[in-house]
Each structure stands twice: as C-alpha cells, then as structure tokens.
Image (cartoon, rainbow, N blue to C red; front, top):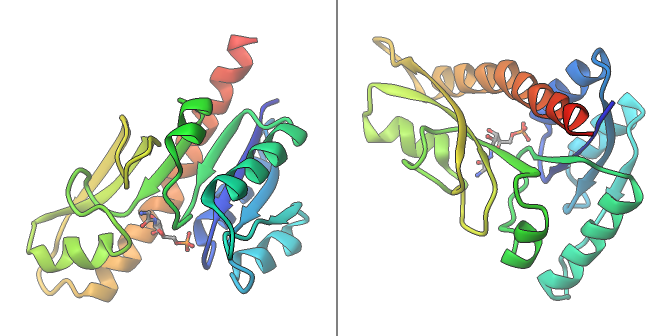
Length: 190
Ligand code: GAR
C-alpha cells in the first residue's frame, strides 16, 4: 500500500474521482491539502472521510506555506502527491525535494495552453484535437516531463460547454489510473 496526498484549490471533481477509485484499490488517500478556505473540495473530502489540511498562503511567504505542506506530507507518510486543480506554482526548493513524486493534470495538450484557462484557450484556438496532459511537476507553470496525454477530435457543433464536459470526463477516467500505476511502482521499489 502506498500513500497519496491530493492538493487542490477548487471544486474538486478530480479529487473526488481519484479518491473513489483509490478507495477501491490497495492504496490510500492520506489527505487533502487545500489552500482556499471556501473551496468546495473540502466538503467533498469530509464526506468521503478523508483528512483535510488547510494551508494558507495569505500574508506569508510561499516558502512558509510550502514548509507546512512538506511537514504535513512527511507526517502523513506520503509517497506521491497529486495536484488536482491546485492553482499555485511550487518553488524549485519544493519540487526538487519531491522530484518525480508530484504529478499534475492539465486540461490541454501541453505544451500548448498552460495556465489557469487551459480549456478555454484550447477551445478558442480552433485546434481540432483537444485533450488532457498528466505530467511530473517542476518549478514551471504546467511544465515538467509528460507522463500521459489523451486527445479527442472536436466534433461538428462542439461548444465550450460540451468540450469542457468531455475534458472533465476524460480527466476523471485517466488520472486515477495513472496515479494507481505510479503508486504500484512505489510498492515495487520497497
Ligand atoms: C481541472 O480541469 C484541472 O485539469 C485543472 O483545474 C481543474 C480542476 O477541476 N488544472 C489546471 O488548470 C492546472 N493548470 P476540479 O477542481 O473540478 O478537479
């Protein structure tokens, strides 16, 4: 069994999808770490019985917040960290310490359209192929070695809403599976 922590800032639909799949596996979601007090993801975690840690970035250095995150990860014996709509850029100090142990999902075919509007930017570009990227996290914004990408072809009459729904459905299907594969590798390494 390996321990996963999920970092999220928002609605938490990916958090929910990951947690439901991991619960049925031999791995464990140790905790949710959230940086926004009013984020709906915290409600989801409470309902699923998953421990929640709120870490504020307000009125202090990013390094202080990251130290707190690091100490939570250590105290919870976390093997792997999944970012699921965590809208912060992690510093090199943190990403080097957790190198190859922090994974992110982004709703575009990176390196195209990084940032917080991946779906809108991909949709508005007119690109025929839309999709998602799962990658290791480094100090950049949605950069780092790509682990997996999956795309679909924009259909006639595709709207932003329909594209958004397809992208989220795709995220919820592929992200838990990739995370389980990575968690399995930790077991093998021991
Ligand atoms: C997801 O679409 C995720 O790919 C995106 O935030 C959304 C969170 O939704 N992440 C990024 O844009 C990272 N740059 P959720 O809170 O419902 O899981």
